[in-house]
Length: 510
Image 1 (cartoon, one colour):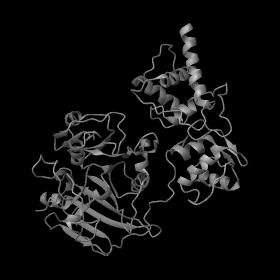
Image 2: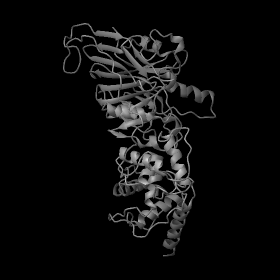
Image 3: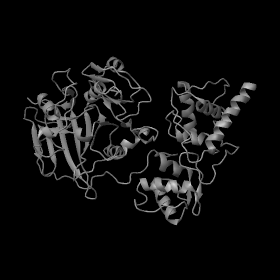
Image 4: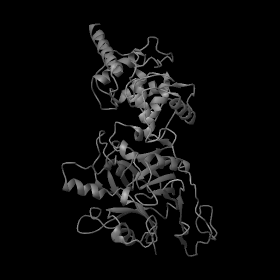
């Protein structure tokens, strides 16, 4: 009995400290493998709410705890991640928490004082409220474009703030009742809340200018390939209007260029269809004095040497191999790298590896299927044993089985800032075996600033991809078609392209 009382006191003290914190980050994200007093406090709070029946607890976040967390999240309308993230803990230790029996908590938790908010528990307030949490929320709203960059911000919730809050709530399907609710604040700070998967983008990626298509296409079969299997491949290149075609008997490629007249933005959408029994994703490695894949060549030369029809940037894992060799202080991870069944790196990053890239894995199977895995899930040997042909370790995962990767919105991860910067980016989406979409966004150029990871997620959703994966970007980004880099200037000098260790090649020139 004494042990139970001591544990309960610990729980209450921790919860009290959490509630009393003034404007500080008092929670950390808890995942399987973590341990500490905060893990114990979560377990005891879950027991108090009826989710545990046992009284024997340790301070370790075990695999069994994941299912308990998911049940709590389900009952409380939260994303069922199995992780005790910041918002899950905020709900757990609040009087808004729902017990296992579906009833709300009877005893009210300690409410934060005036001026608390942000990363601690939220108070709800309306027009006329005053406090530093109001000013803090306004600053977050300014980051999201809800206030202009030059506007002055006060600690008072005035009519102007409520107008912006109301519009935001309506756009995100939240009750617009004149109250700055807990859900509204959580969505603004963390990008997810009850019943909301992701915040609505401030700028839609829908094409505002479509490329002109003034070309007569050959007759095609139901898969989009040439109907006449004996005919020569159809090839069309239009740099002016932004359209490229390759249509063969087992491979069909259509590249369309888009631009947004309201902002400097140019991007390319490639619809790629292939017969997986005849075509495959080819891992084209740079060759030289080192082991293939540990050398560096410009991407056009690598694709040319591989006689590729089409090629895109991959994970450029050779760069991380080189950096780890040269600068051991940073201990660059490579990820689980398999190329054509050959393990190039058996490395599996630890769960707390959150540098960029996060080294999530895109696995390509011989039947043309693409499956996505988080970095910590498997090592290279597992992929080989599972029959994977090749893996590429970069990321983050954008969509998995139609669901948005919520890790993208986790502010505790170092990569969060990288995700929200406009950069040249490239991602691949998967519809079904043999049918894919590649989105290539131009950036760091006069006519295009680049895009954020959020933009790429939105675009992949618009295009209907089931799974989507971010590949290497920045100056490394290349979209290769018939010997040219489509996303660069026509006939660009190869010396002006960043050298890489490998590319993904599609098709073979006879």
